[in-house]
Length: 283
Length: 263
View 1 (spheres, chains in turn red, green):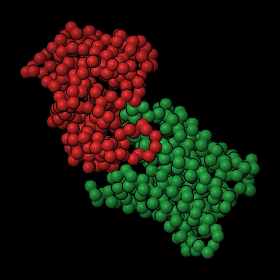
View 2 (view 1 turned 120 degrees about the vertical axis):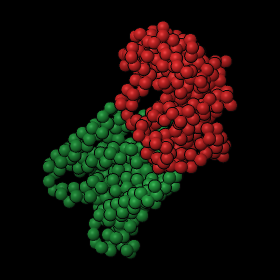
View 3 (view 1 turned 90 degrees about the horizontal axis):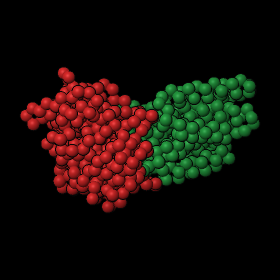
View 4 (view 1 turned 60 degrees about the vertical axis):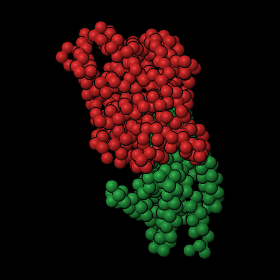
């Protein structure tokens, strides 16, 4: 069975075409890196998979079923992380609010729900982190905590939107390794979006590259080539390989690095964004 | 002090309002919507003055007007990009209208002061029953809403993906806030609603790091501050609202000091 199937999907938002004719399928237990310039539709693609974005054409199937809002088989870690980095509440309490969080009534937890939280925290090694306040933990620890929250409900497909943003290389490495382990132990399919390919390059099975409304899925060596990326960026792109790493260059500058810097200065993804760029010093 | 009928009524009224304010205020602070609560109380001033001008009870005007405003804020709020500006404009427009109503109804100075700064000793039995019924209904609605409300407050995008109806939740919540603000205005007045709604919740969130303990503490603090204020007012003959603001401020700044020491 396929974990995710995009069949001739077009998405338009506010009169702008985000995706046109996206056709690809992700297998079960596959770890896919989602790359592309800012505004190329990485977040929109994930939100569409969650049934939050109307399609102009085509259909999306997740785990064999037409996508609907509130599908418990899909775990999600949004990029916009709200007011979390300033809260004094414990990590455990915040993870717990997400357990059947959309159900009406009082926020009480059953024994089974408590066991599931413990299991999810154990899976990512966040049990100790969960005892501490959110405003006392580092950015990397916070990502790990939110990753455990995405595992609640035992999803078969995990959508991780920019989990590496504003993390230092050591924390980036640990988040990628955690995702890799989840794929191996749980046989869960993962879509992992990022600005740069290199932190992911040895962990992912395939790469999904977005640009110019198109989506190309394939092995890193097939997709990250001059001709393919030139088509996606709509300008001349050169791919440079150095010691197992890949640099995507347009003229004289590194496209992915530049995209990242742009994001740092201009994180305009909507209201109440708490990326917490300044809070990553490690607690 | 409990030998007096009006003191017993005042204690009951303050108790009902404090419990409601403690619960509702907690969510208001958690959601970062304290400014919306502040604005609703000003809208309530207009409602109350307008109601008196047309021969209705001020409480009816307060509740009616703030609930309409709460509904509008919740319904349109998500889409307004400059939400604080929109709320601020609504706030000043409401106060301006309130001033106009006062201008037409000149024999109103005493009641205006009661509206602005509260008059818990003026609560009669009928008003007490109205406060109790509205508080009970609000708390039932809040209990029904609480699980997705907490989730949507902390992680709105995730809650939306999980199927929580974000706009419905925020609209109903702001209508509950409207009732709490109206009740609070009876005790401490529209200008000092912050003291019972925001003060205890903000202090509670600083004193404890557990969610449920923080909710309980917010309610207890509100109750202690309201009853403590009444007691101090009885023995000093200073205004009740002053004492409540003093106790609320004391709890809040003590909580700040405790977090400073803790980290």
